[in-house]
Length: 364
Image 1: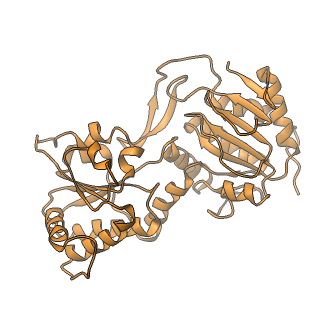
Image 2: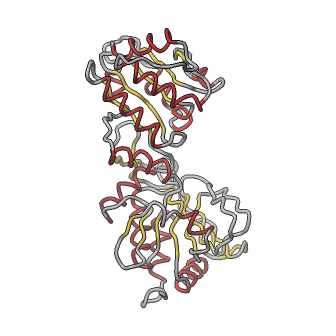
Image 3: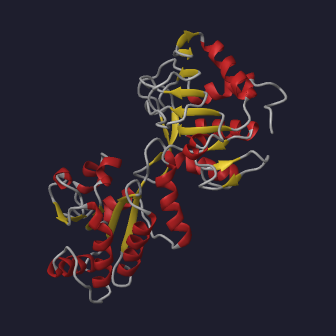
């Protein structure tokens, strides 16, 4: 059933669950953070947060909410990876992060021909030093990441036939790339929000819209790790909001600033953290120490031992799971590849919730 500790001391699982429930019952401003879990675990975590009046935040909320903000404010034309694999004759990779975020990008997309057997052209904007070698067929344009906004602005101007001023990129390179993108039968721009700010993403989506006046072009926003989009979807159907939502007033309120877990901890507002990282051993890197209940995969190393630490099984490895699939853009059932008796995050949360005092938690 896995290992459990209280203040670094190995204990029975039921003792850790009882201690976690007591800690939650005594707190006034809890936060459910990390949330690296499958859909079933996300549902359990959100139901617990609703019951105890906690805020919920995913460890990759910054990236998820950047894409979401552009989609809400400016619109976003997107496709899925399987469609890009079948149809895209031109790929426009943005920044150094796509391969880091989706390591299978090369074998699942960039390294394969289209459905009709044709070789796709690949352009990579500002890949960073040495990154373009990960995809040998990619033509790198620009190197330094800080030049990316300027490059996108200049490229968008040239696609629209407008002049540009002096840039770090030769005019013939910009004009050649603009012409190649306009000639695409079905082009796809691929990016990760992890290293792009919202304005850069909005500019890129504007370029996609401009290209659609002449040809067919779409975007592919790569999802953050730790099933961030699966958690996003679970938050949406359960609360009507994305992560960074709080329940302290008895109903869900979404505010990306107020319910940022890091801010809540560093400001002293949070008095208890329930940290969940079932896919890996990620731990919070906050300066301020707060009583913590940690549910993590084996191998997690904390600077200071959590008040309660329970090892949980990895979704899709130790137990069956439902997760967001980056290739199809949908939720999929994932059978366990190495089934074990490790307790799942969903079950650990359910046991903690069952052990809470019947009256709930104390409130201000």
